[in-house]
Image 1 (cartoon, rainbow, N blue to C red):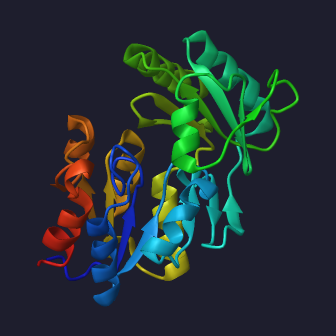
Image 2 (cartoon, rainbow, N blue to C red):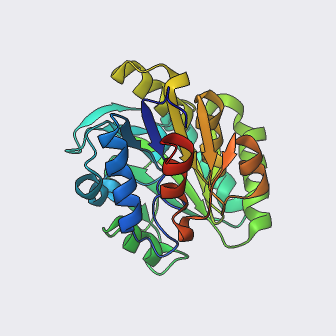
Length: 268
């Protein structure tokens, strides 16, 4: 048991929910046990905030929610607390870079999700996951202002890897580029990362980072691992993500989050 932990910050996809996007009773019960022990609970994800609204009631979320990997922070009623937009002049070059590597591109402007092709790769899956539909546009021309996140989508792992490297080489520290799923490359403002979410929660809730535990499964979770007092990777995470965490639990399809809460935080 890590008795000093006062807050648990969790990723959503691949962590809190199963591969079929189900929030299990075991996960809900684990969050209830955290509350009973006086330990807070918060969520952050590459999802838009509205894509996490369905988790607020069953998990009794009362803390700020970090959507778009921290690009938009909202309260549980979905009121905006803070946001980090990608500079307008970078959006078009980002789109061009992702497209040049064969990735389909989505844009998020505030609460709006824009796509060029409703039948494109993973659009149906994403709509099911976030429980709202995208807006289809003919072109992204004229839609490059106020963008919080750009997503490159591909089932070609090599294309995702090369695009990630191109983003980092071409834009440096002007953006944050990390995979949230094997087929998604999320590009956000440099301050829109999960490490920044943890720091925001630390300041807002007045809890030192060393008293915060983080749980996740993807490359975009590594930054919050680095600054938390306790970091836990899911069993379904790849070796690099697991290596960045202090501890490893079972997979999201085997109630790994609940196991981590009981074994590593509550010591049950």
